[in-house]
Image 1 (cartoon, rainbow, N blue to C red):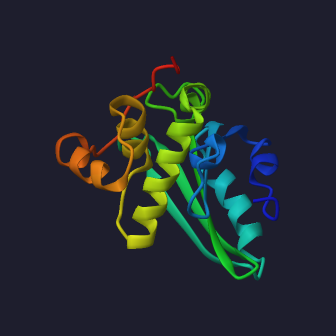
Image 2: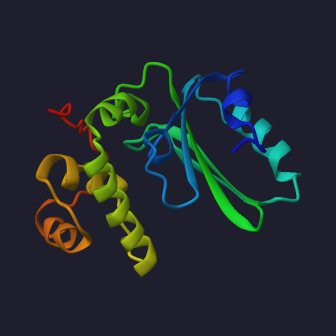
Length: 177
């Protein structure tokens, strides 16, 4: 992420917040999530990605206009290679007053809820899912482990049959007891 400096560069257009697995110390796949709260202007994001696209390490830039969808924002995805490993940076520009589920608001509750045991269980499950090529939503893994005590991928598979989710969620874990 340091090669692109997205947090520093987005500051000129809003308030960028690192969120997702990297912010909780639960990164398994090379994927970074950033939310930026500011003015919804397409040109701001394109001014940044046009600079990044000139870097030979960048091999993909995608744009998503979801202003009229539940996400209510503009998204950019940049894939770049570091040491031959493809990293993905997903960036969502959202209105400063966005009232939908904010991933940035999940960072502190997640950090407070994690113990060494739950952190290990989450990492074990995510690593197993990645190794098998199984698609999953990280928030479902977090819910399964933190709310329902799921401890391994077999329990997670059973949990998914009843509790797996789609769409936006406004879930927060309970603080560690």
